[in-house]
Image (cartoon, rainbow, N blue to C red; front, side, top):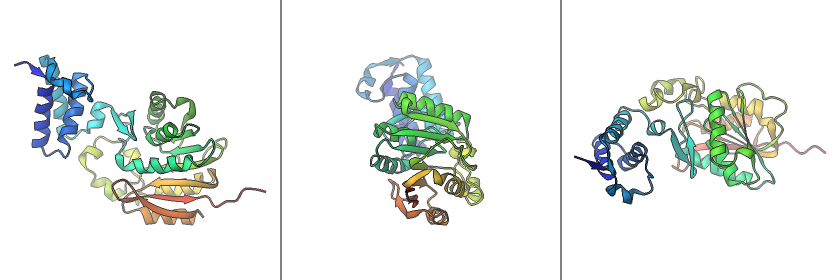
Length: 290
């Protein structure tokens, strides 16, 4: 029997719902649109477009992969963050809505400066820095990651989202001191690897088997990158400049202590969009040279 796009959507929706998916409608809609090469925003037309058997089989094959634990975002090779669409692959973490509040705070701070310079450390897909550049028209963003593939992908995303002329991506390891010619920044923002050794062993299969370990593991206590960034990159902030971190839900007070040990001021913790206290910030207390 010939099926319409809507028939396929309903079939996938039923499969996801029976499997206990928390978002069966979203997953079915995204996979249907991807498999059938149609606009996911024009679902009203789906009942009038008929498909060949190969397309129907392909949609169900994608559903099989998703139900087997492969993240939907990696199947689609893209994901939305802060109203923008980012190309992703298994070399970078999937952008998560939990991180949108971190981007929002970086945007708010950048908007207070004239021609602000923003440094995005451990940038991955580039979602945070690109969101800042997109929302703050005079912002210039430097993004850093240890992965060649992440650097390449973030450049592609900057181009696709129209901020390439104000976005520079560099390969560097934030566990070591930065090169001398980076200059000073009004904002440093980072969502670094922060999963502990114990937590790595208990990660959900969809994370453990598909997302890059290099972007997850933050050392035995998960705090290695906070220590390095605060101790070796913090002096790249202008006097009064702000550093912003995302951290694990049990790490906020420890990250605050690292900021305090490195003589940051105005240290505080705030919640992400889900109400979890996972964003830590501090200011460079240095005074302008006279």
